[in-house]
Amino acid sequence: MAQSRKDSRGYALRTGESQRADGRYSYSYTDNNSKRHTVYGKDLVELRKKEQKIRRDLEDGLDPQRAERITVNDVYDSYIKQKYDLKPTTRVNYIYTYDHFIRDTFGKRKLSKVRYTDVKEFYYSLIVEQGLSPATVDNVHTQLHPAFTMAVRNGLIRTNPASGVLGEIKKSHVWVKTKRKALTVPEQKAFMNYLYANHQYQGWKPIITVLIGTGMRIGECLGLRWQDLDFENRIIDINHNLVHRRVDEEGGTLHINTPKTEAGCRKIPMISEVYEAFLEEYQIQQITGFCTQEIDGYSGFVFASSGGTVTIPSEVNHAIHNITADYNKEETAKAKKEKREAFLLPDFSAHHLRHTFCTRLCENETNLKVIQTVMGHKDIQTTMDIYADCTEEKKQEVIKKMEDKIFVI
Image (cartoon, rainbow, N blue to C red; front, side, top):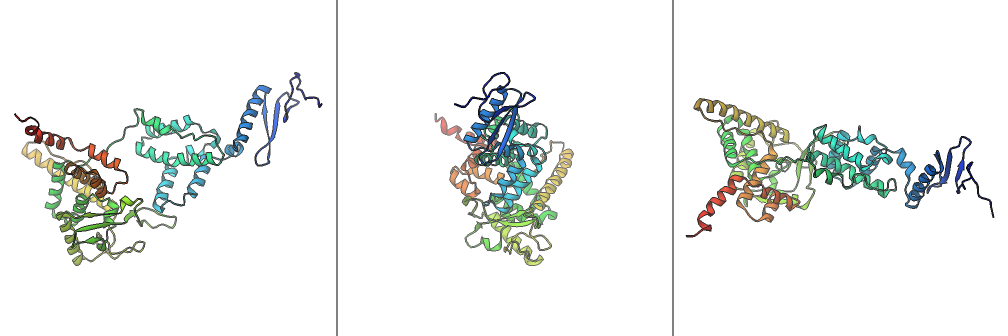
């Protein structure tokens, strides 16, 4: 029987263990890739704690040495390259979010050193120190969590350090989502009346009328072609949208994208005001010229600038901002002259017009599936949330109508 090796204190050494001349201990082993490694400890207790972890990692097929070499950035870059099913614009958005908020800070951390508390502290710093919105932090989490999941499946780490972090933060006082507000009925009337009455903004009347009268997303509206409009049956066929941003390294800021879900493709009816707005736009372009721009094989766009190119979202939002500012300026002066409180409009964007339409729809329709279909909501919960947030004014109006119907005396 072979005699067991012992250290200077007479303790038996296990296979792979040895004591160095300086009194420290070492443990040598072969990993799952047949590579030799050595770890050290000041005493046997410390060394054997490391051995225990190494044996567990080897049994579970982990590669801790590689995890110590690579960074969070390395993991994410590998993850995003393998997301072949992403639409080009979605990929650009993902990479932008990662590069802008993660890469130069948290992304430089060694993968093996990242723990649950590290991720939580990072998310808190984004909200508290950088002032990012919960929605943005949600997007950051959308990048990190699946990348860590891939690292777990590849045997680089044992557990996902981002799991459960967002759920915990959402319960804290710092997670306060600002709900997008729809225009009230008086605000909507004031804005539209001012738009229709001012000659300088007549060119924007058709597109703004269509936006607030259909609830379309701005990209869906600007991507409309004349062939998508059925004037005879007064139906709008929504089957693509215009995206205005950088798509690839070669450039190109305008891109046509198809809806991410089946809910995005839909046909919605034209109300009379929308029908008239389309006709007005057509008549205007008969004089000024139709859109000649072609984007990804699509042409014949409904809404065009004076130069014959497609109208982009920022131009619409800029126009809405200017109209609102001019209204508020005139209303302030008028109210001062009439010695009354001014009825001012909030600053809002094209997406608020979509939310406004949805709110008006919820105020007048109880069938949630109908509302979901018209709006193109992927998740009916989105529809339900807006429905639940219907204006207090409408709730009071409904209750008032019921006064004589509840108590019949």
